[in-house]
Image (cartoon, rainbow, N blue to C red):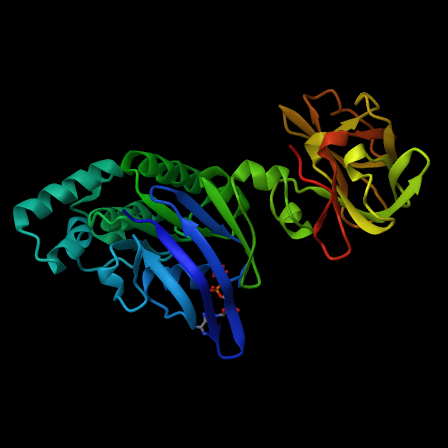
Length: 365
Ligand code: ATP
């Protein structure tokens, strides 16, 4: 079994603390994605699990056993890197079987296993080719096959799709998903792409400046971000985040700014008056006063983007960053730029973040 436990894991490079006191468990068979902006420590975390980097302090346990002093090859893990670095003078089949040769696996078994994994990632037709004759997407499949063939308990993938174009990324993302389900192995995947994290993960670990900001299922992270940082990082288009203040009047708490005046639902009744940021996702904004909730703002349209199934509306909210609403269908596609429209917010979907960036009020049910 390959439950992975990270216990108070810390890594410094001189004065730079790349990973700070990371403690979490990764369950057997789970697909865990580490995500965050460049430099947040996700690759260093993965490299410590793999054994390519020694922790400054803390423990890594695999299947209950401390592996800090084990060589990478003795940890039973398979790593797929961002750059696939295939041997240029070996053909695809020889590239894939390389790890098996090192382990002195007999030839007949090598041939069978190479054939099996080639079928699994659909590259049987490439086995006789040289790496130089393969496209980027094909090379990435070969790199996957090369790891698959060693039959690791856990796959460690470091931005494996980042060098591919958008269509290939989607295709190979689906492939990773399929492999995870078919193999029932643990996958630990590093990316800076929030969409990749949302689509692949059972559990997402959001990292920021060496620390874990939030751990949760994709839907939990999307619906209940613990901080401004997480709220802003996930979602495309991103959550609208408006600076303003809380005021209390006889009817309860309100959020106010130059352009917004929002009655807050009862769950925010204990939030103290003062500076806050209000968050609302574009899909939770009703345009044209048909939301049932009282009007939160009336803003002029800056730009209309008809996407077919939905229309994106960008409003001027007195800042450089537009306030965005998603309206279903094309009903809003003909709206005049400059025309003021009434906006209502779904009260159940409002978020508040304090001056320290942390969530205020209870999380959503
Ligand atoms: P990216 O997406 O850019 O790869 P990341 O989240 O994976 O970023 P890491 O590569 O883990 O981040 O780096 C975390 C921090 O540690 C960064 O500040 C980085 O500059 C630093 N760092 C990483 N490796 C080394 C090293 N070998 N020597 C010195 N500093 C390093």
